[in-house]
Image 1: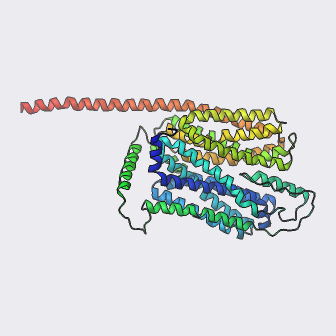
Image 2: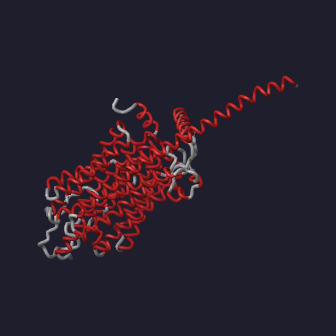
Image 3: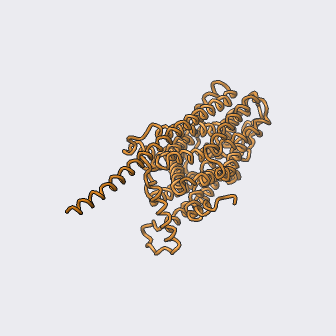
Length: 515
């Protein structure tokens, strides 16, 4: 069979949980990609300048990072995890429903920040729950989880496009219109339908915006997600107001099997770091004392790899349009606008292809292949910097290689740490920080050094990530030796204890015989 029967059995046993987490991430992808195409209409709605409206998106990304950092707090029980998912998904629908009434840029920034906080919590909890359920078999399901982000990012622009204004507010000069056209493409994190802006027209009549319908449709599409989480809570008998009925016999058997798996997974192997949690609780955990340096370095180096690779994803999606329309490439704006679409489509396809590959190959091999492929691709783009055809091909390859690095790294580090550390929270937070920081850093370098530095930054960042990954491999070997030594010591202690107990029994018999 193409998929192991044991994997299929695991999925069937946890299908309801898995499908719910996947649907939450589909909604996450919709929300991430939906805001970029509407920047012109949001600027008109809030009567703000370009610099002011961009802070709205920064507020969302920054709070998404905060939400990812604190999301592990809610993993302690299934009730708290599902409750946080339900509230977060419901908040997203409410925020998108009230966005059309946010006529002030500060109010809009607060709304986006709240939605970003909810998305960050969803990001961490969904990853942690899937890793907790499947543990050593989680790689396949994590690949599928992150595929749904890309799938949602592909669908969302189709919802927004019919309601977008063609010429914005109609009160921009030619230079301002060109800037808005650039930022419209730069900030879109998903495939779009290109809207040409005629720079030769000095003034356009102001259009009646209908973008509010797009946000309301988005709220309705997202509404089944919290309902699905609520239904899962009801089925798991976690809703206090609902009476606890007697589960079916099959449910009892499955529950017993899951509890047994949970007990087996909870048995400590050496030192235990308290399981998956938020970064702050991990740092304060008393069980961290006495752990080897390799334990902490695996967290740090794994986070640094994703800091670099997710930073490349954010920077490439944000500035490939700027690079394409600038000399020496100088592509037409209409053609350059499709590069971001190609990039995100490649990421989506790459995550889909990684699902069977993660079953066939170990995560460490996929990581090495993808990192090397990303370096070679960006380096070739740098060499053939005047070839527009290779820019499109390289963009596609870059998206394919970068697509599965995050889920592979998550599965790899959790496997190294035997699912006892805080790798999920650390990696999610590091990836978010990398995407936010690298966008700002690369943007500043492009502004001061020129568009050619865009690809040079990509090569440097990718090489640093690859070097850090080799450091991770070294500390993996060191940590494995530590675990082997700990297990040997435990075995020797158990053997000596059994020998002492065995020698004590004849002495007791002699004393009884003499008495």
